[in-house]
Length: 402
Image (cartoon, rainbow, N blue to C red):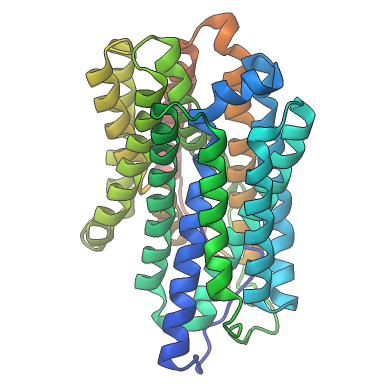
């Protein structure tokens, strides 16, 4: 869910920092987003280990997805206000320290509720870094931010890809997940050393952009539900594919961790390749291909979930197809309705709730109904989005009135 927060409206400044300072800040935010990716994808391949550490069943430990997403939702709402009022780089430093510290203690937790509390802190700091990186990058580059913003989200994907690789290496060496979490905590702390010495970019925004008119409430609701289903599917897949592969006896714990990396790696590759594609194709066309591709990937997993090559192929196709859904949907929404802050905030509320509900729901049904419920729930979310996509495209547009 790595997109600019609607809580902080940003007007490009005519004055940007000197080229050297701008470059230093940009690399600092890129490093922070690598850290964000490292944190975001570590829970999935370590879920069974955390379950053993806390003596909890899968349906019980899935509460951490709810708690983490609740923290993310709160952090998203509050993050924009804090970055408007406080020095941005100092805020990023505090959030990175908090995220590093919480992950350091995660593998030491023997209580489910202590683990949930740490996940709440992790979710809150992740949201703050997400909001902060997007906000500060715009302050640095102003109207020229577009390519730098694409780079920011690419580096998130890079971190999300590397995290399960580190977990797999530690498990493969027989050292367990504790060293993996500690390595990640150390890596997440590194951007602190860079950002701490840099002056924060100046906030030129004194007030929220003026509302330009009215938007169609039904269309806004449809798009918000679309984001609810999509982000729930993306987070649910990344969080549960490793456990699913082990439960289906298709992969060892090490191979299952690499499977999580494959998903995030495909997502990262898809984001990189979608940049030139978005210039040539309409958002509606791209979105339809994305949804059909994700459906095909999930069908491949259903048909060969116990065969690792088929599971890997389906995982790659699903991740690659999901890569550009979020930004493409935002682009499509901008073409259909006016998007002042009071409208876009509902999109992010939907996204945050999706990340909270669907992964938790998978955990509740994973053991009672069998591992296949994981794929069926993700496929149902994608299929529902295909229906919503049709409605969004066909619904008559009621443009905002100036």
